[in-house]
Image (tube, rainbow, N blue to C red):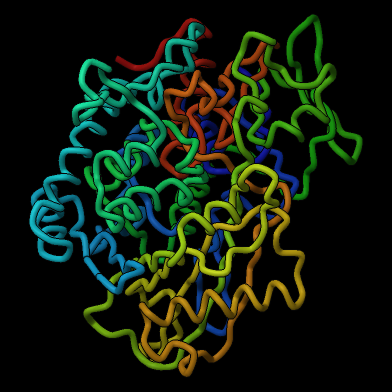
Length: 501
């Protein structure tokens, strides 16, 4: 039995802690904050409750496997999960609306044909077919296995090339490009383009620079479905925390780690702000790279030939969240998630990600995601409704005060297209800007020379591992859960472990 010190209590760290504890190790988690869950948090007031991080779960199999292997109670006995229906409703700039069914390939084709015109569904389906090929080629190395030593091979984009059409395209051979270029080349219809491109900022990517393989993001949602946990995504974090406690994982909150102890060339424990030292045979860091570098002698624990945090081509955007407490019941035919698309996509991308010398700022017409869960746990009674609005924003673009309130006003105004009479129903609102230093990258993607990969879970320092959204395989609840599984596998089986077969 080894002693393991875990820095941070995010979803990836807790996933690793539960698995390691079941394997017989003694795990102590040190969290400088007052609670667990990382980005998976909940804001509550006056009987209303709102998710302030991820609002839906994709790839629930990750947590089904985790709960199956760490205890007798399966996930569904600990968390009430349900597929949302429809998966999403989209309101486009020209006024067109379409509702996409959950995890139904044929249903999506039919819905797109009916709303956008004959042939729209087939064009979308053909792109999703190519995204499936990319998913099949990269699922194991980018989700289920440790980052391979020859990670450079993942720099090639697995999205199948499409031969250029037309007289001047003949003889030029197949080509792949960015997600935005693929969207324009293969979809043509501006509404389909908006549908595809909108998945990128939702995961922290700029479609103008993200590789074509980012098409796996809508493929993943469409294939494996969108799931909601009763009580919000925070309920999943609570269930994972309880599973850790049941497996005798020790938690210390308000326990800031200020240093990683090294002895004989390997990690040997952690130093705490109150002067204590906790010895350990292994240290697992579930924190951002900048913080890890500040507490580790010698800085970042990855070598010059490794994937390093600075390899990402742009800083991930944050999300502005507006929690709205509404008077009046939620209509029975309401979609759980509605996406109100921007009227000026180019301006939105320039504002959120920047364009050349143009500074990143607040977009005047952002794409707004409206979440309206049919969940009694989110409201004081059935005569009220809790609605969450969110939009991507550039880091540092919202200094607070009048600018922040004006941005929240704009989101509310835009969201009225999805919730008629919204502003007249508002009892109160809470504006939640992205917190500095809490911007988490999206999931790892192949292509672009490896610029969208994240650092390996194992490091150049023996006994030191990285877990969670800032390391392989990237951010989001499902990928963080897989990060925990990978780290546990490396510690239990050794650094030569290449994943489950």
